[in-house]
Image (tube, rainbow over all chains, first blue to last red):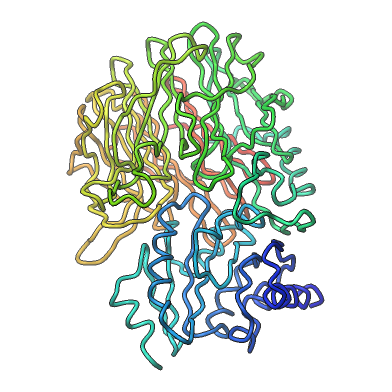
Amino acid sequence: MTSVFKTTALAICTAALGLSALAAWAQAPHHAHHHAHPQGQAKAAAPAQRTVLPFDETSWAHALQHGPRPAAYLFTTSYCSTCPAAFEVLHKAVQQRKDKPELNAVMMDVTGPPALRHAAHFKGMTRMYAFDGFEPAIRQAVDPAWPNVTPYVVLVDAKGQTQRVIGPPTPVMLKRWLSPA
Amino acid sequence: MNILNRWCALSILAVASLCALPPAGAQDPVKDTAKPIKPAASAPHARHQRPQLATGAAIAPDGRLWAVGLNAQSQLFVQSTPLDGALQWSEARILSTGADPIAADGESRPKIVFGPQGWAVISYTMPLAKPYTGFIRMLRSSDGGQTFSAPFTVHQDRQEITHRFESVAFDAQGVLHTLWVDKRDQPPKGSAQKYAGAAIYRNESKDGGQTFGPDTKVADHSCECCRIGLARNPQGQLQATWRHVFDSSTRDHAFASVGAPANRITRSTHDDWQINACPHHGPGLALNAATSGYHTVWFGIRKVNGQDQAAVRYARLNAQGEPLPETLRVLPDARAEHADVMADGQNVAVVWRSSEGAQTTLKAWLSTDGGQNFTLKTLGQATGYNDHPRLAQSGARMVVVWRNTQETQVHDIRF
């Protein structure tokens, strides 16, 4: 729990102090869900784009249960050159909204600085996560039927309902995602 | 089909990798100076940095099995063993690669191939600082792998762009062919022009990698991040298959004779997968000697009764690379990933891995009648991180090399 606290504090401090140069792999470890979306802090804390948070087999269930709504998760890899365009679709969809739904990127193959190198491709990103463990196991925890194809996007709406798509979401999906609860 | 042996020397390296995982960024390009985000110097590393297990394997002309990969310190190493009788792996030999970072994950892995006159080459992709970019690098040997040169860049184009996912092979005349995914034809950023995917480029060397001909285009509009499958035709000329972007948004597969004029391609699959995404799941190709056609395996999503069906599929192609629709089969495993195919005469082996949570099973689908009928076999299992299965073949002799963090399994394919 100590490291969980440190991670959360780091994210808050990073945002509050505007330390944009601080790029730290959040070292915490097993219980990634504890800091995947600190309850009650998702809206309060400003984006912590310079931190990569671990995402393990338990993170997804916790994010769905306790994470912010609406939110979007784009699962990507260091070699996925089609992913930034899909993220841009998400960014454009929320740009004019006051509630600023979270847009999260989840790197599946690299962590730390190699993951952060891709942050610039995800304009408007709230948080960056990185798989922390065996990729197929984490992927199947997110969706047992998801073949290893990226971008894989999950839209979580205000009611907690999810829409999943490989590739960029369609306008119809985006509209449904952002409709009021 | 037996497990021949446990690869003891590599096991030691693998276990060592668990104990001494490199810090995050340890494999970063040293020339990482112009990134939008600089890592903090004191950044702690991840608990579970993904080990770079992707390994290349080949059988040398003298029948020894060779493997090339990265150790826990991200150093390139080679090992070899005779295949007759019990495996006796040589000590891992570290090769000098200067400051090169080396991609060794998934479909991007170091490779080793052997040619005539004692020639052997090792290739790999060197990632550059800018995301999605890289150079194809190579080490050359003229003494059967006893010594290797310093690494050099294979292609003439030196822009900081994509040159990745290389495949290398010697043809029957001893010409070394290197093919790779290349983005030099992308329109400038901000341009109104659109260019779907990337391109496949190639070059060739007639002296075992000492000198190379010009970079030439094989085809426009390949997928960006999948391996390229290679096989010889009956005359010993190389044929290639790769995931291709047809009609700007359909990701199926193309087939081409290496050396043919640019964009002379045949569509070899018809999944009609309409997607702008990155499957990272390239095709496999093997000669079907009985028909002068080919066996191929690939991953794709196609509509079946109105529903998307993701699957790894097998089919045979004619000599021009056109699919023979009646031969299409779905592998008998919904979780099949990263399949590859080998063939010799009427014997055909399709090999893949299949993960269920942390458990991964190595499976084979074997045919003795040219792909008419198959028998499913389980070759091995692993828990946690593991590489894709790597095939090595010399005539009728076929083995599968499969590395995980504990060991490297070598399976002899017996029909």
